Image (tube, rainbow, N blue to C red; front, side, top):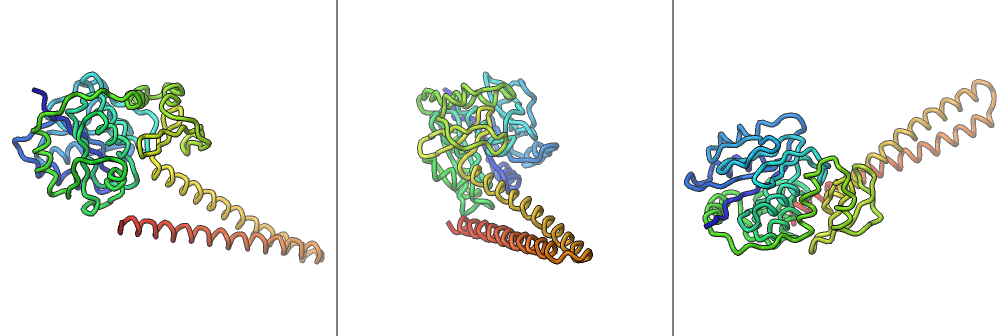
Length: 339
C-alpha cells in the first residue's frame, strides 16, 4: 500500500535554523522523500551539508533530470526552482515567483501534481507570503497542509498568511512538529484526488523556463490593469479560492503581500530619485542666483532664488514622505507581530 511519504517544506527568514532543529529531532525510524526550498542567495549554498549534519536523512542539490531519491532530502539549488515530474527532479532558472528563485510555490504545486494524496506540505518561518498558494495546491490535490505556529516562528508572516487562506491540518510549534510528522508520514493516504486543471497548468509554467507562455497564463486568470514589477508586462488576476494572486505572461507570480511590498519598494525608489533630482536643482538654482548677483542682475537673481526655494520645499516634502513611509512600515510590522 502507498504511504504518505512525500514531505515538501518551505522556509525563508530564520529557516536554516528551523530546518536544522526539525531534522535533528525527527525519529530515526521515520523515513520519507523530502523536498526543501529555503530562500537563499544566488551563488552558493551549504544547506545540504548543514541538513545532512542534522542527522535525519542525507541532503543534496539534485541535478536537472536526476531521478528522485527515496529517503533523501532534495534541496533547491541557489537561483533555481526545484520541481518534480515523472520521478525526476527538474532544476529550472525560470521567472521568479514572489520575487524568489528558488520559490516555494512552484515546488509545492509540482509535488502536489506528482504525488497528490501522498504529500505533506509544511510552511516554516519566513516573511511575506511565498508558500501560501503552493500549500493550497497541496491541499486541493488531497495532501496534508501543515504550518509552524506563527507565535513560535522567528518570522511569522509565511505561516500566518498560509493559515489565512488554507484550511491547515496542523499548526504546531517547531518542537512538536517532528512527532506530528512522524505520525502523518506513517499514515496511509486517502483516496486519489483528480488534479485540478488550474494547478496542472500553473505547474507547467516554471517547467518551460524561458519559453513564452501567454496562453498558459491567460488560461488561469483574467486580465487586470496592473503591471508586473519585474518586467512591466500585464498581470492577470488568479482567483484561487479566497486568495487573489497575480501572474504575468512570462511567468512572474505574486501573492498579495509580495505584490504590495514590491509596490512599496517601487514608491520608495521613485521618491529617492525625486529627492536627489530636486536637491540637484536647488544647488543649481542657488549657484545661478549667485552668478546673477555677481554680474549685477537682481531681477534674475530673484527668479533663481525663488526657484531654489521651491526646490528646497519639495526636498523637505520628499524627506517627510520617506520618513512617514518608514514609520508606517515599522507600524505595520509591529501590528503583524501582535496579530
